[in-house]
Image (cartoon, rainbow, N blue to C red):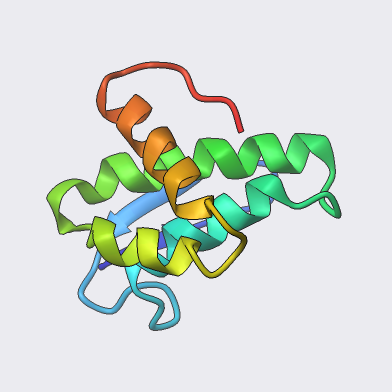
Length: 100
């Protein structure tokens, strides 16, 4: 599990923990950040920050992330969302820039 600490006007801080953030499993945090980064109801700057947060959480989790579960959760957002999320995570693994 991980804990995501967000402070106003500062960077995201990620710490490993057995409790997670309010009990949310890491795969759900990845999926929620992915969803937030796509939301037309969020400001463009906020969506960009959500994408940055997604990458940071993913990199901090490393092998601790249940990637298949995150992709399964993403599949409930819209048809093909799991493929889009998987492509993003693959690009992160290769050290490439992402765009959402």
